[in-house]
Length: 159
Image 1: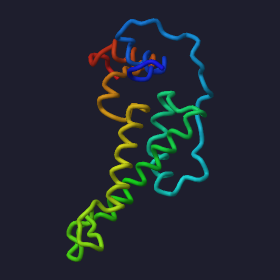
Image 2 (image 1 turned 180 degrees about the horizontal axis):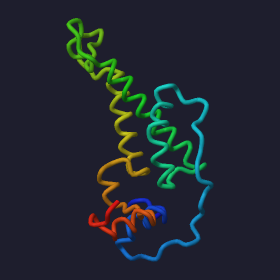
Image 3 (image 1 turned 60 degrees about the vertical axis):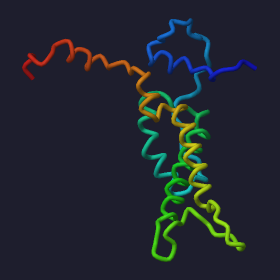
């Protein structure tokens, strides 16, 4: 097993402009584009799917084999939201992220641990799908021909 970061897909390297000028894998498999949300997604995760899927599909980054990874992203976002909503301080419990044991010790609550794990999962998936500003900054999306023509014509063109 090679050390270091996992290799990037050729499609992402092309969008980034291949800054290292390494040879691209022209024989990389290209799975069937598009996918549907799994039937088992809870409502909150399905709402996240509906929010992010159109963008990924437009960039050609959502394929049939990406369904499970995208579903995991959606579940993690849903878990973060639900855990965070349960951790709202109140007069009865001003520090809900802390739990008092039977012996009087303070420890991190189970809901806080779930929230932290969801944040770790989200951070990992950000890099996979280009969901973070840093991962997007390395991607250059090609313009459509009409957009390129308008850019060449400039603002002086009377429309």
